[in-house]
Length: 249
Length: 338
Image (cartoon, rainbow over all chains, first blue to last red; front, side, top):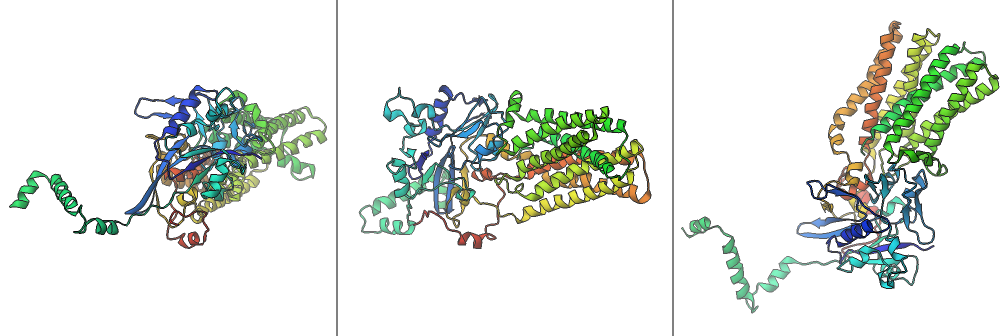
């Protein structure tokens, strides 16, 4: 069975929120919109977003790494939000594995959001129905678009090319290959949801600060004098005037 | 979790209605076997109408939880998989069979049909309560709820509401069952209290997931949420984390224990030991149980911690050192450090 999904490369995602913004833009104007906004220019702007980007820090100072995690509906293969829906509004398409909500049947009981361990469903207070990422189903099957544009809005807009889209069950697809080659992983594997969306792990980049300083700050380095000079100037430049006077005294 | 007031209201009304019917019909059922005298017809009518009104009010009140109330009938579609669907079907069927039973009882119809509908209502009432409890107990992403204890004490609280009100009506209508219902009130309040305590104690021993597990990262790397991507709260943080409630929880839980269980237990014991019987003591017992249950339900929701809160750094922390051995044994799929 086909399973359309996103693969996100955590190495190249820079957390620019372009995917989230373009997702909101497309889904507000297209077939599944609108995604409501409340108090958009006020002190507490809130609204419905299909895609949110979290930022995490891993490790202990100074050896820390910051990474950004874009999180939209993961289109789980064993989606727990589907069986709990009392009306059948929440359903998983057999032909492509995309999980959707039928807005005409949704009664807004919120039980599907309670049954999602990822917090990827959001209740629209204006429309009184549950909303979630559709994988831009209205784009990917739109034959009026050029084939290269039949992708989710977030994939097309990502300036870092951190997002891939395709059938993760098809060995010929780009996403299948990239998951295999780069050890793609899923969120919360213990929850038994078998998510479709995968993430590509970050490749380690380690800088040994002491080694770095030893290498740069040695007398035979032609840049040594320049570095020391700049170091001295920059240090002095940050010292307040009063303190400088005291030091001279 | 954010406590929905309409669901708390449904618990109180449906709980009282179903609990009361269970005891009312139990007396009628025992009469079939020559045990007891049964209830006068006008008492059955009054109690039955009250039960009907309560379940109707409950269904009406619970609909305020829904975004689209007029589509509520569609909730019967997924009976095979959804506990919410089963709850809707069983509650509706309970109300319907209750009405039929009352009519058959009042017109003096064939006892076979009367008791057929009586038994049906009895079973549907229990199934309705069970389904409601299972909505919470089957949610494996709220670990506090995900236990059979949740179901047992939920049903016991239905019986507690029913038995205390039945004790009141036994006194009010001068029925010969006052002693029985004083004993049953004591029994169900004590049992519900015991299981509610077990529910709370269990929370200390839960193996909670960590942010590392949520992100599928190595367990020995400290993780910290730096930014959640929005300047204000959103649906996820408000629905699954009730900030104000969490602050009040340490006050409300002891208060709920006191009002729901301890004071009513004292009142029932006092009536039992001293032989005191008046409106006040039985009326107050039920009112304490009722208002206490509202607080207890509120606490139940606020106590629930959804695992999605991990992504926002709002999940209760598991002692890192406590879980160290457990974490080291776990296999992880990827390693960021080679």
